[in-house]
Structure formats: structure tokens, C-alpha cells
Image 1 (cartoon, rainbow, N blue to C red):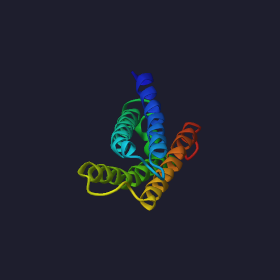
Image 2 (cartoon, rainbow, N blue to C red):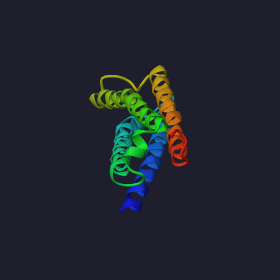
Image 3 (cartoon, rainbow, N blue to C red):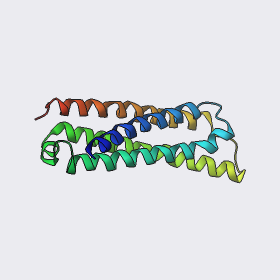
Image 4 (cartoon, helix red, strand yellow):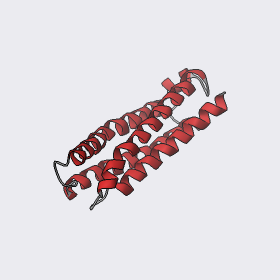
Length: 148
């Protein structure tokens, strides 16, 4: 079971990066109505992947891999967790924006998002991707015994 949980954990991290990349591709200046409608659905995929990463990560910490004492005593683990939480917190603003854009478009109350709004969301998604890229680095450092 442990190899399956590890594989799902790694795969979910790949999917997180993929969904964030799709959000960047869809959310750009001149975003179309079709893309505005699609962004909340892509964001749901991102959320599901993030929850799978969290669930499988917790399984690995408490039941598989090196055991919880290895992780909780390692400051690199806490950096990794802080990065995950930072990405999750930063993702709230784009998620809420995608939902708002979609609702406004659906109600026919306003035009497509302004370039300024799009630029702000893109900046946040870029930050999410940059922080996400550091998470596997923390995993590699822990696996090499760094931080112990």
C-alpha cells in the first residue's frame, strides 16, 4: 500500500502544478467568456489535487515512509508544510475571483474582467507556482537527512 500512497502523493503534486499552469494559460489579458466559465472548473481540479496531496501526505507522515517522529523533528518538514499552507492561502483570492467573474458573466451584469484584475490574479498564480516548486526541494532535503 505504501508505494501506491507515495505514487498518489507525487502524482497529485504534478496535477497541482498542471492545474495552476492551465489557470495561467486561460487567465490572460483578453480572457474570453468561455475561459471565464472554465476557470472555476479548473480551480476545482486544483482543489481536488491539493486535497489528495494533503491526504496522502498525512498518510505518509503517520503510517508510511519514515514515521511521524522523523518528520515532526525536522525543521525542513515544517518549511515544507508552511509552503503548502502559503500556496493554499494565496489560492483563496484567485478562487474567489474566478467564481465572481463567472457569476457576473452568467448574470450578464458586467463585461469581461479588466486587464488589471487579470494581471492581479496571474501574479498570484505565478507566486503559487513558484512556492509550489520549492516543496519538492524540501522533500529532497528531508530524504537526504538535511535538517536533522
